[in-house]
Length: 433
Ligand SMILES: [Zn+2]
Image 1: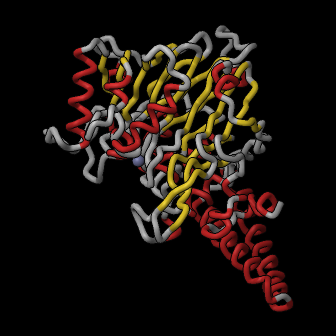
Image 2 (image 1 turned 30 degrees about the vertical axis):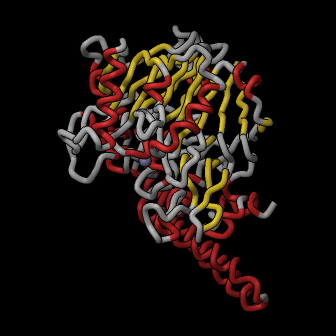
């Protein structure tokens, strides 16, 4: 990454001092407000949170190198299958019909169908198949990406207990999956073992299989870029953990991909053509250290990651992903979180339940267009309901539309958010609308 000049550093530290003085003044005013108005405790709470966050950012030197792009208005549409089928490109974040958090992203580009992951568990398979059947009319998924060896990404690929999984239901063309796992020699009844067996069945029936490492290195006939339609391509991104084992878990082995969409006006002979390309980023459950290595790799190549129109929140909106180093580069305008908001599946600590407070604090610097598939309905009973529901991002001739099967309420305006999250400064005005 380019070093900041000395002048910029001096300017930066002056800016930090001015910002701190402003914060102290605002804080004093807030104390006065609270003093004179007993309902002002919330105001103080939000301000205290903002102060802590701002000081943290200043100390860490994580100011944005350039101002984030303004949040674009959302062109929200009523969910309509026929209309969605007409789009050049549609990217679907699926509700999984489960109280478990997991990923399943279906992408349709022209006649080509691509599925990234099939979570959240095997019991989700009928829900996923019913959804996909609305769009996959020829019984074939041309491309399947399986990001890493966890059930919340693999569970519905295989068949179990009389439930037909994705591989049994559809013919598959090319399967691209994780090169490494810590689960070596998995048993045939484990998640990874069942996935391998089902994948083998597909290969025997003619599917082509590559790991993301083969794709990235363009070995054995694998490609780094696959053309999905005249205007859309699938690009396998670099991940340090395709090639290096690590001990902390499976997440960092995640297959990372970019969907690139070329818009009218794009001229391949012109190097400065970025405004005519939309990029959409999917990093599975890759965590912070992998994200930083990815940013570093592309910077070292002299080919930094581009700004992205859409980003699937890394690792379901966990505090361990969507780090500022990555977000500062890709500056997403639309963010979709595949999770069940507020589930205690992984932790009892409210602030770390998906989507986490830390994720909210980082992402709010870039956009307020943040949407979540599912939310806990009854905490006692463990029942769930749709938040935005199935979320579809579509783009035809550069026109972005979003379709929601439940509603188009932004995360910061949901009841769940108001009850469980502290609203970041950038979202305060919007939340009060
Ligand atoms: Zn996951």
